[in-house]
Length: 442
Image (spheres, one colour):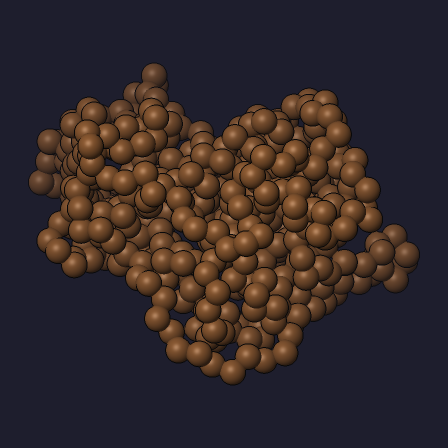
């Protein structure tokens, strides 16, 4: 294992270490987690955030022989205890034999990260917590699987990249569409000019986020509401943000600016990501963001240096327009037009179409059949996963820029190299947010 700090480190001292600007990270020496120090054959995991998505991810790891869930963490007692029961039921036979000691549960992520016997953590909290937990995890020597959108602000994303690189960690973003055949084939067809020159794409996702205006509801025991809010502004409890009990839906915290980025960041972290992949923009971004009509919920356009335009539209899919054809792709959906003729609308034809239309020397993209397996493989090999931290940051930046255009009803220019506004447009304050004490981005 890689973490060498004392398991008895106090919660207060850990908080100060990982959140106060300028504080030294909780490490002894960087060589303790050098790039060649891969974990053992059975990777040990901790889960932080056990709502619908977190439990779903956990179910993806539990059947595996090459991974073992050791700990769960959530600020809600009911969700935390439910996750523990799920894990221990799965490993019940081994518990009876005395070979598995049980699943630990924590209310505070710092205690989980302080364990030296955990190789990697899976973060599925609301978006406003992603960066602080991921940065702390990287400094604690853990590899990371972080749900999308990777970061809540642009500066948070860059901070996550730095922490992961400085500590030689592996971070996989949960942009699972990169591990789906239909999306990979669509991107390969675009990259290789099968539909001609492609200078336009439509990304159809939901609306931008809005300020939270929910009324106060009576708080119930078992939820640490102050901890749920964390770095976000203090506000009264409302069950829409954090439903009590073991719920099966995806809560609407994601619709509000304080905690998420609305449909622009929720589905946009998937679909803008595919546009980035298809055009080869994984390490760059647009140079201009053009706002639509005042108070509009669609219509923002992204202009890239090579002339490509990506437009946010209503709906749910991604469409690429070439001068010799068109591709529409979504989960379980793939349509290809060559000229005006619909070549196929059968998603099962993807591999066949790729073999038929792509030459032997075609550009081929990273192939992954499973986002979780890909992360575990990267943890062992120390090679970058299919959706590395830099890739996740660039896609999250797109979502943030689109939201900023809506929030401020402004167009602005952007320098993807310096990651700052250009040409006297925009406001550097938009790159970050205010953090409630004691939390800081450091």
